[in-house]
Length: 127
Image (cartoon, rainbow, N blue to C red; front, top):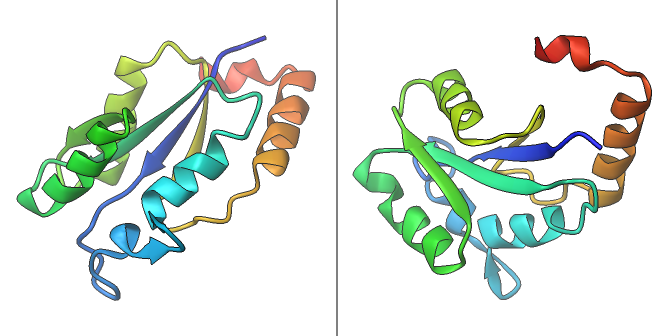
């Protein structure tokens, strides 16, 4: 089966709720809560958190590193560029884009979407 990665875009500089990815859901910062849910998707091979290279995101990066989460840091004003940079560090052919403020993404639905995508032989999108 084709390798699939989730690129999870997260930053702490939200205008409406600053630091929201570090706010706690139960016993965990939202970003870790979300990553633990995403890890339950059986057809996902890796998760990469794309964040900014600004000082504001240093605490986020510390948490991710201490939990052995793969990260990529890049320009704060270029979300698409951060995703494109992540493509350079993964060998995955299929990429799923998820935002860091979506902690209730359903791993079963993610797996189902991957199955449908792979069954349709849609790899022409990746060329």
